[in-house]
Amino acid sequence: MSQLAPSILAADFNHLGKQIQQLEQNQIKLLHIDVMDGVFVPSISFGMPLITSIRKESSLFFDVHLMVQEPSRYIKEFVEAGADLLTVHVEACKGVTVSETLKMIKEHNIKCGVSLNPETSIEKVLPYLDLADLVLVMSVHPGFGGQKFIPETLGKVRTLAALREDKGCGYQIEIDGGVHQGNLHTIVSAGVDIIVAGTAVFSGDIAENARKIKGVIENAS
Ligand code: DX5
Ligand code: ZN
Image (cartoon, rainbow, N blue to C red; front, side, top):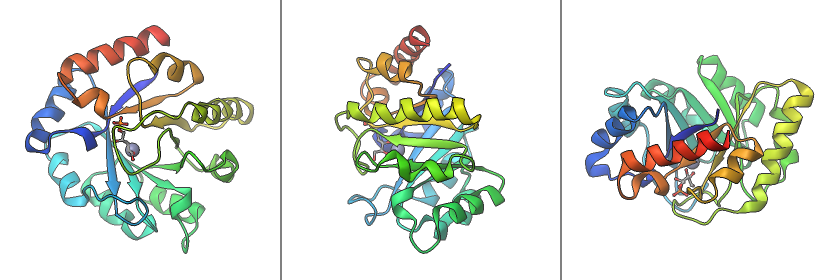
């Protein structure tokens, strides 16, 4: 069954620890952590110190999404901060190649993911499907929460699901951006394993939102 990964980008940072506890109490297992560098994407979010802090209190799986130019420069630091999975963008790896970057992540005995922007063609990630533990399909332009879901990106999900079947690869498929209760059913049916949701989880009652979203996922699976 698909899993929900709440994105803390939409959290209230005044109460971050408490909000993460609420997720844990509602059987959430994954936490999506959006790191933005102001270069690969226009905005800046947070970095290693925040991850180090929340790692002390949480045993959730930390799914760290690096929207960062040349991410290989920071792998060691993010592993030390407590990441369980590091996802890098194909568009962001320049000097150190995508393959080299993914291998560097794996050498630290954590999982590695590769992501692609809405305008990037699926062909760009095909060379890494044997290496990656996860493919993150961006369903909005990276950089901000609260954007509108781009439905055409589900075509990539379907292609990745079919390729996984054909090739016998083990990667998981994650979607990120613009997910809400109304489009969840279509997303799950397309073959997504991990569903990132920020605004849909953190606006209003977190526990109720998490329960409702999980209910829709269960019905659609
Ligand atoms: C966008 C981030 C997303 C974002 C999702 O750059 O990668 O993870 O937080 O937020 P919502 O669910 O609000 O679209
Ligand atoms: Zn993200």
